Image 1 (tube, rainbow, N blue to C red):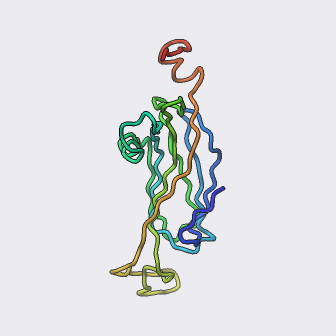
Image 2: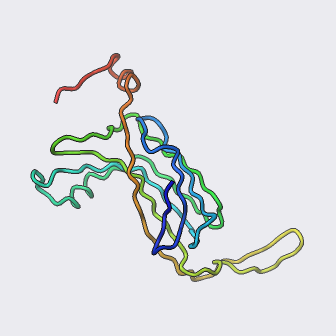
Length: 176
């Protein structure tokens, strides 16, 4: 479980089923907005991998390498105003490279969350008409919002006897 906060105000509580996955498994989670202090209008979730190169052998800066090597494997987008909970499932492709680490290079996986939140506590819509069975609202023309993002690291293992076994017909060891 993770508390996602912006300026010490809770935006959501994240429940991940697990943080270690295998290739071809989905990353399943639930975002709980019930105890949030800031309203969330929209959320985008990305499963990304980034290569990290040891600074002693890197020709470029770490930020440049991360920007160039960032790969988005799957994504999820949702308009979530007034949601109490939101579930998501991001598949890890079977053809992706599992997480690894050598003395010079490593590959890391992250879940990146991008939030669009409201700054004002008042609702972004006003009631027009209300009767016994219906409520009609109109959205405000100008709503002040802010954005922020955060990352949560995941572990992605290979699939022994799974995808690579089907590809090569037997377990295969690559020479480096």
